[in-house]
Image (tube, rainbow, N blue to C red; front, side, top):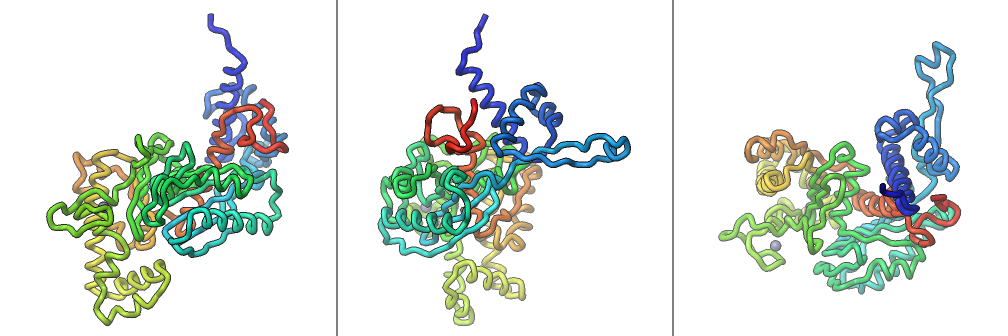
Length: 418
Ligand SMILES: [Zn+2]
């Protein structure tokens, strides 16, 4: 007969605790509902829930139901995540744009800062700047040190998340930057690192459009194009962390222009914001190029299309057409439940979505596209912060592994009693 060892008990308990926290993150629920949904005994649920209530991670509220009202019975007790019991910082490092937010346990941004940076800055200098902005946000927040669970960083470039290293980010001239190690050293908090688009995909899966699906593909476009895949609720990274580089799938091998990667006819040479802007060089579009902010520039382009400018509409249609080819390829390769559009594709969703939905439903193999939901992210400019924060929330709280005496686990005042 197999004996249950101490470490197995810890593992099972940790698994159940994670399952309860994840269930409560999705929906508030009673103890009875949790036991039923998770298929664990009500005794186990009660023990773990009591711990979580004692530690302050979960709170309860009495809900008066029709039955309790009629029978003058006890109101039903619904449990929910105590959203203010812990926080993480989400750091989005884009190409020249830095966004940092303080985010609660439910993925809500409570304060944030946004700055532009010179892409010729050294990585060390930028990480020092990030540390000082985190310090300023923290000081202005009234959140105690022990309630900060960690920092999630979504960085541009190829990122090896296990080592917390950005292996290469050509747009920032970065090579082998030890983001995790340096930022931990500069801030004193635990740091987890992921590619920024992959982090956004993760954010959509846990706190955005993908909360009710298990498999999604997130596609981000602005200056470049990238994707992130969540499969069975987990990020898919590929063997060398390169999964999602759809910007460099070749769409026009013979007639295309050269991409920054060296190949010809990559998707990225066809569907980005600079591609639209470079097609609007007629003097009558000068006002667009005078706008310094890229998001506002696209807003102006979309306004022109809305006001009936046929030429601008054609440029947007061209983008939707090439993007639909990439999405059809994704649908035929991965068969996801949902495709979430981010960045400029979400900003211009009214223009892009109908054409994409039509093309994907008609042209995917065997009707696969008819079952795919194509939706726009609602995260707007903050999707990067929530995405980076979501990585930290899962690693440092919801799905943390039970390792005793590890500083990376919950802080002293909230120490687990495993
Ligand atoms: Zn390329």
